[in-house]
Structure formats: structure tokens, C-alpha cells
Amino acid sequence: MSRRKKQKLDLKDSEEKSLIKEEDDVQETPEKPKMQGSDKKSSPGAGSKTAKKEPKKEDIKKEDIPQATWSKDKKKEEADSEIDDPVIKDLFSGLEGAAFQSRMPFDKLTSTEAACFPDIANAALQTVKVYLNIRNRILQMWLENPKQQLILEHAIDRMEPPYNSDLQLLKRVHAFLERNGFINYGIFKRLKPIPAKKYGKVIVIGAGIAGLAAAQQLQQFGLEVIVLESRDRVGGRIATFRKGNYIADLGAMVVTGLGGNPVTTLSKQIDMELHRIRQKCPLYQSTGVTVDKDKDEMVEREFNRLLEATSYLSHQLDFNYAGNKPVSLGQALEWVIKLQEKHVKEKQILHLKSYITLQEKLKVNQCNLINVKERMKEINARVKELQAMDKRDIQEEFAVRSGIKRSENVGRRMGSAPGAGQGDRGETGGVG
Image (cartoon, one colour):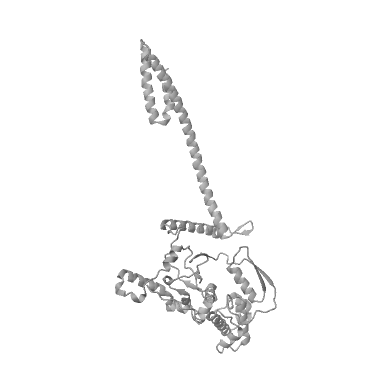
């Protein structure tokens, strides 16, 4: 399999292929943060496999590899090199790629831009094109080097003629992009100091990634910021567990979609390597043993069913508020689980009721059996009494023989039919 090494991020590389390293070439160290390619927890056993030393590619010849394995690896290499496709590469390059990575349309104004630039929105098509070119070019400058603040003077110096002739428009576009967080965001080196005079005070509640990013941005704008966090750590649901040489991310380790994702820019700024997500992503138990595939699929199916149920509640039944408060996804999932538990409990109650009914029937049956046994004892005692007589008349002889026969019949029927005792009781009642 191809083991191409990811090159270091260059200031000129704004393409996404420079962010992705081949998944099998990972040799993780505790000191450097990694973005994992799966949202399932990995075990220490899995990490140790990655660190195993493998033979060099130069030492392995094509003829030494079995044909089936070689063809498999070739297919995998072709799949990994999809990002080198000219169409995809084109999508992330140039002015169009800069607009795409900044979540803006390449060839038209957004509604926010139209509101902030009414003179441009109502102007001739050529004026709009000039504005769009300036905007996309400034975005491209920022994405080419997100580790350093893009100040207005540098943007003017690097803007190609004739688009650098209208300095007032350049200043407005730069200010708009900076104010709305399209440029100069994240962790970067400032070329101009933050104003000493503070324009106001802001309290940010929560030190998750959103709270920290908001606090950082507000501080860049010259505001005094205080961040409040209830936990003894920052990061929110982003948490990394470390034990010895092993590292496991407990949440938010997957970057879903690199195109137009500000996390992509953030990963460049802090030199964080992104790795392609593997197709095979096993689950591990606390003992390090992999979870059975059938169990994993069963749990996944149940989880998807829960998500479908909450989606149905939200979109079909329009159940999005409870007590005039918005319902979160977590609350909706909890309620769906409780409804499922309620349904199971109701079935359990019905089962217990039927069990009690059967117990009552069994109790009646057992009482009947006891009565029959008592009656049989009386018959046997009477038969023995008659048998002990030296002389018996015809009626007494008939009573003895019929009593023995009926006693035997009742005994046999008691063994074969639990409910037969009640009828036999009446049948043997005339023996005495």
C-alpha cells in the first residue's frame, strides 16, 4: 500500500490535500495532538499496533507480493488519491476555492453583503464583479497564510491592478470580512497590537470551543472578555484522555467535511495533522477485546432508530418546545428512551397479571387435588374396613369392588389431567 508522507504545511498550500495524511502511516506520540479518524473509542491495543515497525517500501518488490493483495492495495491507493483528482483540486484552488472554503458563493453577494453594501448590490454587473474579485482575493490571501494577521496595508500591496485602484472599497471589504470572522480568526500572529482602550466588557459563559473562539474574536476586536466555566478544565466536549504512552480522544475528534470548515484553518494554525477516516473502525471493550460485530451493528441500528424517532417528533409532529422552552436533541432522545421503557413496563405488567391469573388457577387446582386425596383416603379406609369383614353381603361386596376400581381410576386421571380431580370427586362421592 502507498505510504506517502504528508508534507509540512506550507504558507502557499491552501488546498485540502495538504491536510490529510495517509491513515496507515501514523506513528502517534503523546506530545503532538492528533485528530482521529473515527468517533468510536480506540483502545491501547489499537494504538500499539500503529507503532509496530514495518518493512520499508523499497525492500518489498512487486513480484514478492501476492497478486490479490497487490490489487487490493492498488485499489486502496487509487481511492486515497481521489483528492488529487483535477476537478477536486480545482475546487479548492484559486479564487473560487477561496470563496468555497470561506462558506461564501463565488459569483454573487450573500444577503449579509447585500445589506452591508447596498450601493454595490444595486450597482451595475461590472461593479459587482469588481467587488467579488476583491472579496475573493482577500479571502485567498488569508487562507494562504492563516498564521499571520492579514492587515489592510498588506492586502492593498498584494492586490493586483486594476482592483487596487479603489482604496476606499478595499478598506470597506477588508473591514467587512474581518468584522464577520471570514479573515483574522483563530490563533494567529498579530501584526498590529490590540487597542489599549477597551470598548466594553463581555462575559462568555462556557469554555468550550465555541466559547473560547468567541472570546478570542471579541478580544481581537478590543473588548475586555471574561470566560466563565463550571468545570475544572476548558474544552467542553473536546476531551483527551492520556495514560502513559496512550492517548484517546473522548469526544469531538472527527472533522466532518473539510470544505468550508473553519476547523481546517484552525488545524493549519496549530500544525495539527488530520488523518483520513478509516472504513474499518472497530469498537473495543474496557478489557481491550473488540466488541462482537453483531452486537455493534445491533446497538448502531437501535441508535439510528432513536435518531429517526426524534427526527419524526421534530419534523412531522413539530414537537420542538416543552413548557415554552426549546427541546434539545439530548432531551428528545431521553424522552424517546423513557417512552420505550414505558412500553416495555406495560408489557411486563400484562405478563405479571397473566402470571398471577395462572397462579390463582393453579391454587384452585391444588386445592381440588387435596380434596380428592382426602376423599381417596376415606374410600381406601372404607374399602379396607369392608375387606376386613369375614362375611359380606352382595351390596357390601359391590361397594368394595367399585370403591377399589374408582380409586384406581381417580389416581390415574389425577396423574394425567390436573383439572380432572373436581369431576372425580363427584364421581367417587357415591361410594361411601
